[in-house]
Picture 1 (cartoon, rainbow, N blue to C red):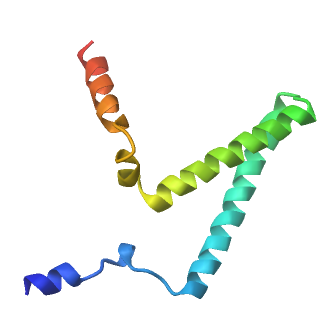
Picture 2: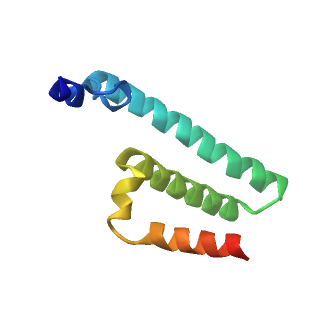
Length: 99
């Protein structure tokens, strides 16, 4: 009975068929791209920035969205193995709370 409970895959962890993965991935890219481009365009026009600076804002935003997508798809717990950032964060957060 314990082995059966360990073998059950939770719905959030199940792997979808390839076709559905492709469609959902394409949807994610299109929505992410539209949202990532719209915000710098609106802010750039509101601040009356030159087109070159708006282009740099869009590039920086797309880069940040790509990093966020990798963190979400790989998982934060895998990045903890590469460094001790979580330990540093916990110690600095506790130091900030103490003061």
